[in-house]
Image (tube, rainbow, N blue to C red):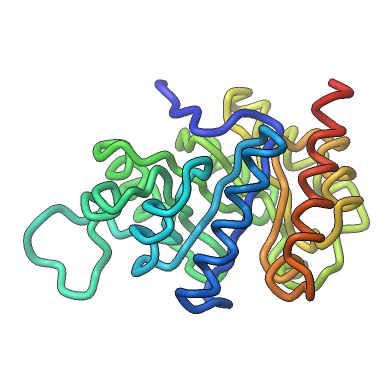
Amino acid sequence: MSRQQVVRSPFLIVNPKAYLGSQDTLELARLTDELAAQFGIDVIFTAQHVDLRMVAENTQHLVVTAQHMDPIVKGRGMGHILPDSLREAGARAVVLNHAEHSLTLAVLDETIRRAREVGLATIVCADSDAQCKAIAGMGPDVMICEPTANIGTGQMDAGDYIERTTRIVKDVDPSILVIQAAGVSTGADVARVLSQGADGSGGTSGIVSHPDWRAILTEMFTAIADHKNKA
């Protein structure tokens, strides 16, 4: 299966979700873009649909990513997210099946295929071991494996979840890149995730709720750069 390699491992994901309005999103995007160029590290940066074009037009080094889309084609679909418009707005990827916007497997499969048709890379979330295995079989470009209970808590899984679920995905298809980010809030967390086999890490609340965005992003970029240099 052809796969869109929109990022190179190891990489960072910055996912503001709905924590920020447009101006704060632009500020964070510009800062992340600056540091991505400085460190030479690829970054997936998600934004609200209304802000995608603004982020794409004001950055150069980010993989601008939608936070959801619907598997519709041009025509009827009032209130739904048209994949073609995301691509035209400058998005290069889309996150699907996040715990805060979950999909049935049937809809997810259809949406992955629709994204592929318009040239959007797919970044698909999974929780349990069974979900990780089933979704890997659908052939997404990137997967986010995360236990829902740890999202937004600042507490990472204390067991073997990171190594186990990364291995499950890679056993199905070693070319799928795996993000582990649930509970990640420091550079040390990022370093741990990468050392346990993940291709990328980053977060939401650990970044946007930090009093100094430059400081926390620099910490995370440094952890990724150190891991990259050791490889």
